[in-house]
Length: 156
Image 1 (cartoon, helix red, strand yellow):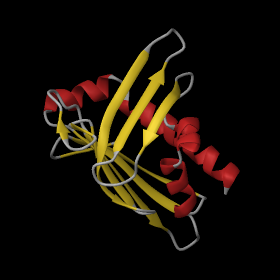
Image 2: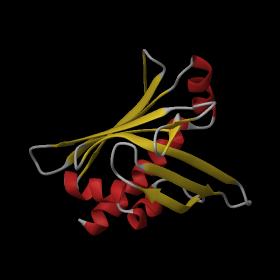
Image 3: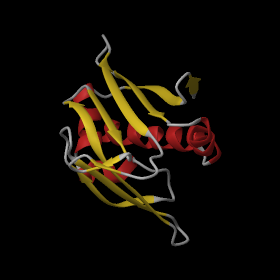
């Protein structure tokens, strides 16, 4: 986990799969559901309208009936390379009262055919960033990235 100015938290990971395969895991709902949250939690529903202004709604459920809805939208999408998404707006640029973060993804092809992924979150306040850390940002996002690595290897 890296922590920088601007209340930024991010991880950088490398995968043996191609950039296109990693992008599929981020952009195809049935693949996305298989890796996005650490087990034993699961993604039970997701809508991924990959375009600026498109809906990004994700519902995650825990083993004891917990339910978390991440409702937001994409701000920027460069297919196969990068995306920026936020809970600060809903689809159609409808502002939300209490945004938590703006997420981002950058995929880079490496010379050996593998992929470097930078996946992060920028928070509007230090308090929100600290809340994310307390929720288990480092362990959770790395566990999800491990699941992404396993899935991408299986479909590569």
